[in-house]
Amino acid sequence: MEAYKRVFVVVLDSLGIGAMPDSEKFGDVGVDTFGHILDTQGALDIPNLTKLGMLNLHPSFVMEGVKKPMGRYMRMAEASDSKDTMTGHWEMMGIHTTKPFVTFTDTGFPPELIDELEKRCGKKVIGNKSASGTEIIEELGEQEIKNGEMIVYTSADSVLQIAGNEETFDLANLYRCCEIARELCMKDEWRVGRVIARPYVGKKKGEFKRTSNRHDYALKPTNATALNALKDAGYDVISVGKIADIFCEEGITEGNHSDSSVHGMEQTIDICRKEFNGLCFTNLVDFDALWGHRRNPKGYGEEIERFDKNLGVLMDEMRDDDLLILTADHGNDPTYTGTDHTREYVPFIAYSKKMADGGALPETDTFAVIGASIAENFGVAMPEGTIGTSILDRLV
Image (cartoon, rainbow, N blue to C red; front, top):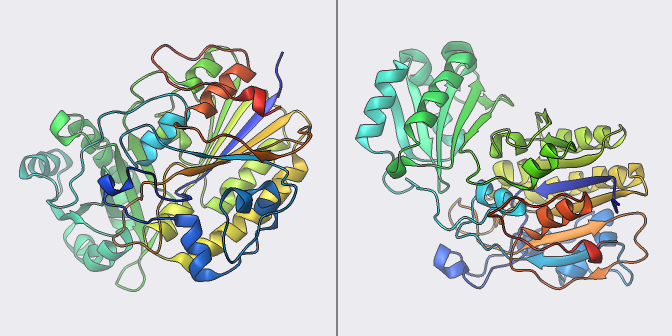
């Protein structure tokens, strides 16, 4: 018998809560995404996260926890050898990644890859370096438009990104080029986690603006996940935001593209008002893409406040047999050096109207407790080769 008819997992992309013991190995010392936002910005207007126990989980000298938190909360450590979006989400659903994806942060992509990409796409590549997406478009956008070229760049993540002007490159052609890049990057030595189409509009510097027509071309998960188990058993698996891209549609029964994190929460609220039986899995990417990578703690804090308002609406709309889980996939400390993700613990906060009380849970050494707990709730077996032990008995 299901403890919950519906489970909502909402990923606040990159909202880490402090350095993991092995963070130095990843070049991250003393990182703390949520804590440093509070340190630099002061108290945030987040009454719903506060009453669920976020400040009990992560104490701060600028904000206090509550005496009787409504949520059940703990820190989760990542078992996978990574601090990547894909590996974090995959691990939530049972995949343990032991070999990190390839990065090209220091060198750019090799000539052999660029030559083949130019030949098959019919466009000359410009850029080919690690850069901020908005900055490289400002730098090279006019040249790309004038000469019909193609902006290719990477970051500290395992990613190949292609930026193209929607009016002159053509969106369908941009997607075609990204599909070619994804095929090329299946080679072991070029195996990046994601290829991303980064369309933008505007005609000159100062006017360029990226659009919401971003599309991720991720590797297929290396193993079946809890999502596959749920779908195969006939349950709904509804994705919001880039979840469907991260899992290459594997195990998804309905996908919903989001224009922003606020839109993603609005979509989640709308889904909550409808009938379904299974999982709604939401990623809110703006925390990471707009504020973490751009090292903007003020914008990050304001995004958390916007989220908190819609969190309150979602909590009101939830039914007695709904379970909500809030978490993150890695850190991205906006006060730290560079522009990379940061190796951090992430929050796990669970809430249901039928929980008698809240409080702390024991820390766990993997994100995979999420998928295992959801699978147990719906009475389905996790696929062979997955990791994670259910904590469902602590969530009812």
